[in-house]
Image 1 (cartoon, rainbow, N blue to C red):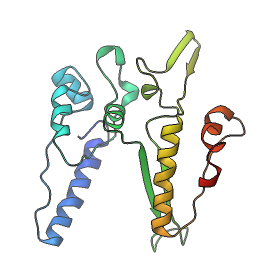
Image 2 (cartoon, rainbow, N blue to C red; image 1 turned 45 degrees about the vertical axis):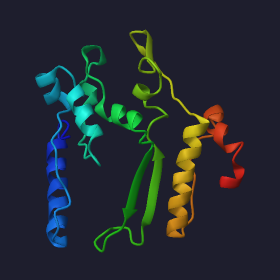
Image 3 (spheres, rainbow, N blue to C red; image 1 turned 180 degrees about the vertical axis):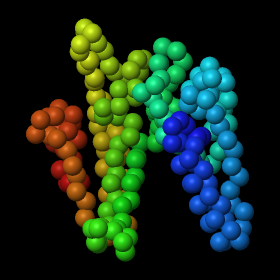
Length: 195
């Protein structure tokens, strides 16, 4: 799923890496299927996430999703955020970002993994059963609701703890419980032994 903007370039580079890995191993491991999403899909199918893409994606073992230009989408015009749909439908809550310094890196010895919850928080398009989680009481003001559930907080903490345990490393939990008391406190008050 190429997406918008620089998405096609990123996806093409990713495919090159995967094909090079196949050649190195000497075994065909991947079969790629192109699925339309984003602005091109909207032009062709009238939706930024057409039904055909959702159906085909369900049959795949994995997905490569390029960036999407959601700032150009109008949800009233059948232009939902494909990333939000995929994350919520397939329960892809763990956004895992490994970071390591390379020999040419400015900072030496960096070896960390950031684990971030990807279906809740300030993602307004994922926070409500029906609607986006944003409202405008007047033309100069936007209110955005964030969602924090005990279930999602516990699941993301478990993923982070598993990764830290496998790597035999420490875990650092970053939060704003000092000012976002209810949302952060929901998890931390009852799970001190995990921290």
